[in-house]
Length: 392
Image 1 (tube, helix red, strand yellow):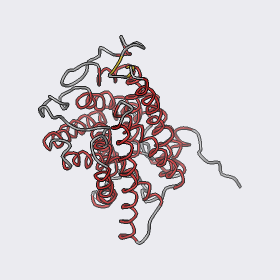
Image 2 (spheres, helix red, strand yellow):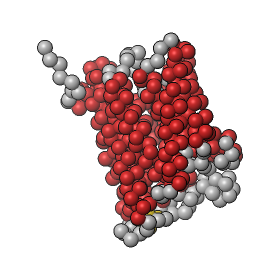
Image 3 (spheres, rainbow, N blue to C red):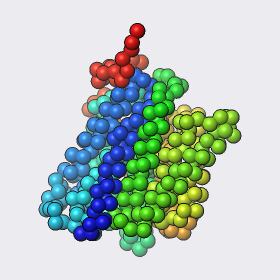
Image 4 (tube, rainbow, N blue to C red):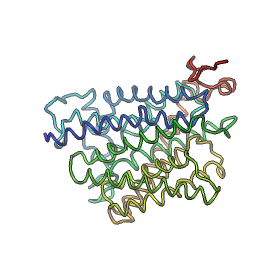
């Protein structure tokens, strides 16, 4: 065990959890209408709790329990045989488990943005639970756990390069989000502004801060690679923020706060798979392109395909993660066949499995709330609470 590595990953674990609670909850909560903000908080918090228990029970073992091509087995379910003396590299294995648990929390939580304001709470929990075990954990094993997409797998000695989750986190969540939004259909009134741009900005700032643990912590050591990952993460986020509002200015004649911070998230998602490999100049290029590319993806999904991915999960996270994964090969840090093949394999599995799980869960619990509940808002109708009390 290395004490410096352990101290850094202890900190990084807290940072990644901070991304979901409260970062993502505030970011998403500010974007919805006031009558639905508590339901978003409820989704994010409940998912964090449920994924923690399921990662402990089965998820960690599926992802990191063995060296099979497709999954890691169940040998480490409930952390069987993992003690305070067990090591993963230079880290206590229980710390590696906890760090990876925070990734298993935020990935299904990202999907929340696609179905807010109209989804059944029971569906959220059941789908998220099954999706993490059937989609997220196996994909994690394929790329990070020594499975079929790792070095020596189906793409040869040079496997898929995904430093911190462009495929594992952002592609899987983005595609699942797009699929669920399509299956649910649009909200009855989808042309409403965010109820609290201030919440959105605060949440985005927390996500930016937490992303240092997300990308920097993925080095699994306190070393130069972690420092470079942190630096390029920051530069990409800054560049994407600026190009997003510049493109807004060109197209609409004004720059918005929500646009500025959405650009930040686009830059963060795009640098994630490349953060352990690229230089600061390459990161600036990735972020600069991402701010425009993801904004155009928002326009494509919303206005041309007419899919109500409510908070643009696929356009920002999915497109960003896919773009960053491709840029790893474009800058010569990975093989084209592995990067494109990995995207294709994971994308196909995500869509097929997510569709099957959505149909299964919809037979067990309410998929979409009724029109009266949607009109009145999920906060009071489903959870019996209001975010704001009306005063005379």
